[in-house]
Length: 633
Image (cartoon, rainbow, N blue to C red):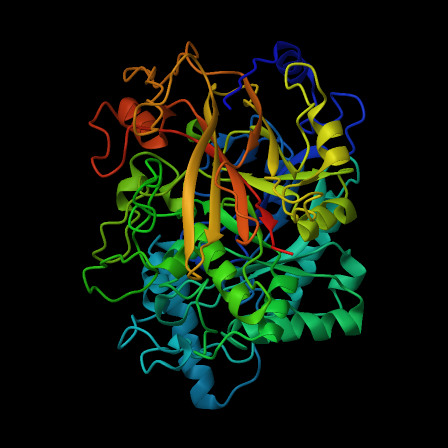
């Protein structure tokens, strides 16, 4: 049943509030909504430094996130975030952490080496510094990129073409330790419980033969605990199992808690959500349990494109082709032909998880979802009209033309201005937000701050969306996003889902709310279907069930959107009409805004040039919730 509701009172309250956390606007809401970014790089990341970010350090990143004006590390303009974030993870690469920065500033404590090694290192350092000073450090970064695999398939770590850069600078662990302590100190300085939360974290950057398998590691513990260890990097091991083992051992030794967040799976060459381990072994219950324990959440959208799904994998989904990114991180020029594989995308990964659970009894891919940026400028900018690019050197419309590495067609306009992590937590503290990640009561957006509630249950029939308190009814009579449906109270019942989506108070109106269902059929094969469950206006589905597009109010001369179409709020109770009690399933919500201008169109208008032909002029920004799962009894 389609139901819609424009909640003027809630929108008014949202516009009036000065806090980003907009929970507790209705009575008896046990969780508040907090916005953040778990994936931001600063000048302490080697690739960020080589690509022009020589000044935006962790302190700059936190000041930006708090809404303070800072200096852009590339173009030196004064820049500022319109609406502060509630939390941030500075997640610099563990590999060569802070090393390139220290070499360039002359503060590096390089280890003693043989005479020949010292001479060789002197030439390397001298050449590197010259490249950094003349603005061509990205050429060195290009040379560090991995080669493509010698053949498709198999273990990419063991591929003959896979190799890690040699240690031209010797053992850099002491330099990394200095950098790590500085990063930790910055997090401690900016953490303000109840107002702003800074998490200690880093990125484990495994990328064998260009298969992007990166994980963001974050911990709720403070500086005293964090300084007891040095972040684990892919230069130690490129296998995720070894990362989990290190997390397990370090947790036991120090008392630190951790989670690892897979990111940017769309260019993992099919490995991120594979049907086997990276080594090609069968997934066992032990492996599945370890992975689901350490990786409860994954990143569904970011600057390097959207990882929800792909048209080749979801051909019947009219909105599948959204911010599709098609560039591997490798240096060979083999035409860079992108091939979407099921292990690359979140939706197909969730489906694979159901099938594996049918076989081994445990689901390795039972994860929630968030968005984050992966910006390397130190500036967490996910707004189309305040987007400062991927690196420091693509921070202006003109410089976006020059972003490509080697002969690739990649430009700054191929990058996406997204995303953000939304968390339903009791308070804005490290402990409360971390617990929300662990229980998966989180969701992601491509930038807009849409407020989304999603509950599953068996008896929301008496709830009136026009009058009821969604959170009160949802927690009382159901279970929130990221969790499992309880057993049905009676045979023959189908699950119900209580959904509320409220527009970004400063953004565009909403087009529709969709439920994406995945399930395993009688033959053991995972299926998917997209349901339009609530929408704005008076549109009605056509004979084939397709809801007409909402329209486009974007002015191509100004980039402004007229909010003359769409809804401010959509609320509904939806019952699955295709439910079978014998089929394991997942459900998640996708909320679509009305069309708005993409950052590439805004650049084109400013430059008075045609928009980048390879990218759309307008996009429909969206939110994705963590799933709710059903398991047959």
